[in-house]
Length: 141
Image (cartoon, rainbow, N blue to C red):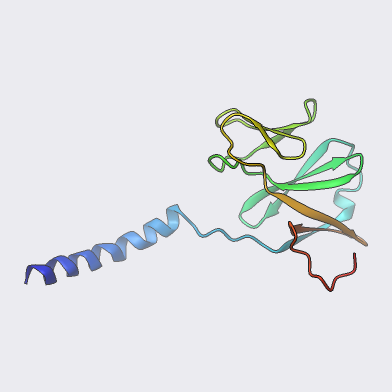
């Protein structure tokens, strides 16, 4: 009888805990690609940045002399947002003093791995940002 009571109480309380846990830890929704209007980004100076939405995370587009580079702007240590410091040409995470070089490689502080890099392609009037290696193979490059 006790096992039925304990099992019933566990089921009852887990029905309340499940929505709370889903609220506190939402599922990560990451798109395969994001399309941005090129006219919003074509006048960027070298080593300037613009933010964009990458699912439920921020993305950061960096204009370099050789073109555009994109990263998910979230620190690999504890998911804090990173910012680009153009005067140092480095990414910085203010949460725990984490540093990444201009290519997103972790160089100082607690970040355990590089920023997640995204592929960028100019397609007519659009900048298309893909997961790294996530381009459709039938697409013209």
